[in-house]
Amino acid sequence: MVPDVSTGSDTRGLIVYLFGPGRRDEHTDPHIVAAWDMAGAPDPGRDLAATYSQLAKRLDHHVDLRTRELGGKKPPQHVWHCPVRTAPGDRYLTDAEWAEVARRIVHATGIAPEGDDKACRWIAVRHADDHIHIMATTVRADGRRPRTHHDGRRAQAECRKIEAEFGLRRLKSGDLTAPRTPTGAERAKAERQGQTVTARQWLREQAYAIAAAVRTETDYFTVLQSLGIKVKTRLGPDTGDVIGYSLAAPGDTNAAGEPVWYGGSKLAPDLSINRLRERLPAQKVAARPRYVADPADPWRHTTTAIHTARTVLDSDDDAAAQGHLAAFGDALYNIASATTGPHRAELRSAAMAFNRARRSAIRADHQAATALRKAARELAYASNAPGGLAIAVLFATVHLARAAAKWHEQRGHEQQAAAAEEAFRHLQAGYQQAATPALADLTRRAPQAATARRYEQDVRAALPDHADRILADPTWTALTTTLAHAETAGNNPRRLLAEVGTQRELDSAEHPAEVLNWRITAQPNRRTQAARMRSTISGTSSMSDTPHPPATPVATRPEERSRHR
Image 1 (tube, rainbow, N blue to C red):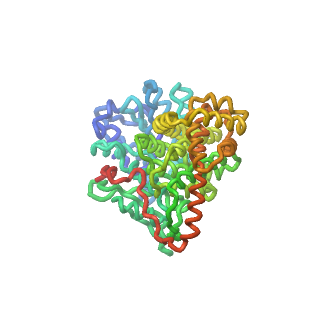
Image 2 (image 1 turned 45 degrees about the vertical axis):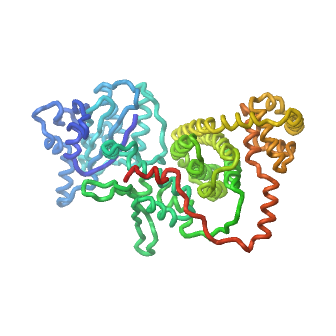
């Protein structure tokens, strides 16, 4: 059961909507199911003699008295509105049951506490099977305003109780860190335009993808504008510094032809200017020298940073863990952006799903996750991953997403845990799509039997407690090919197995050979490292100060920007 509290100032206008046909003729049999006084509340839905104006006048009775006391000035935002909707699949509620829901919510939110004869006037209108609209005017009979502080949170808490008592689907509790959901008008507009998402949702995804890829606040606004998104900044009166910003999607206008603006914090709490500055410096950073580097480096750095994040989640430092989850959200966008192949769609879906898991009521220590965020930004400028490195990164993300779901669940973050689980499912599906043919190819190119027996001896010597399970794993043959590649690159197989085998316990791994395969894949090529070091030492004078080109975020590539043209 979902309540959605808002306020306004047009009593009659809201009544017209509630008892009218709806924006798409979706309203059926509008009528009052509960009110402050059923006998004194005219019902335009059931009484042909009742009018919208009569009902508005009765609801506004205390408002009008207070207006006269204030010399003709109406109290601001005096109309309180709270639609309450059951979840898909819930049973049908009778009018009497909806009436009880309404009375409990106006009591819980402070609109009309039970037994308070001075409370606000209110009505509950039903015009569909699955929801009602509670409407109130927020001036009491004694002229005071009701105590509605945290009314949305209190309505949510009461709905959780009602769900349990009415046998309805139990929805997950929130913590006021969720982004705003699109309004009915926004959804209707998207449908009319043939769009699958609203302008608000589209802008949110663009903003997340760009913030994940750019290095500075200045670049953030520059890239947004380069994609056709309108940017409006708000400057401080004294310093002239940016203190806020709003975005408008290309072609998204109101009836007057003006852009429809959405503030950063209204897109998502961590897209406000202050939250962005915790992750992005305001000015240009020093240019990084460019030289011919190993294209595998960004992928290896990201894999290492993800393994570190997994360790942080197991620590007692919740602020650092939350910081790593926020950085992991950025990493998912850039991994999807840098990935090629049919599994890319799953990675995009994972990035969008994880947005709800990247923040909670725990304040994030973003500085603790600098390494992960830096490694992830390298991917925004990286070329295709050589060999199986992209799959090794993806394999690491699967395990971190599952750990994130468990971390949130242990702390009672129900919505975040569900979002992390959804991201995990997308990542797992993407991994299977990418890994299945890659492992099959490694199996086909297995080394000779004598070499495989030597690697078997290495496994028994380096990982004696896990050797039997590793050798019985169906992916063992693929692992022998990976060991052969690592040996050719200058690594000692036995030493390498011992090193990667200690990074995490293998007891719980269903396929331990598969775990080792991707860990070894992510190890550096020692011979390439040595050659690069010699090249760097001899060629430092040829370094260039030219900065990297701007990134192309995952959701904003040219072929995908037709959504608001």
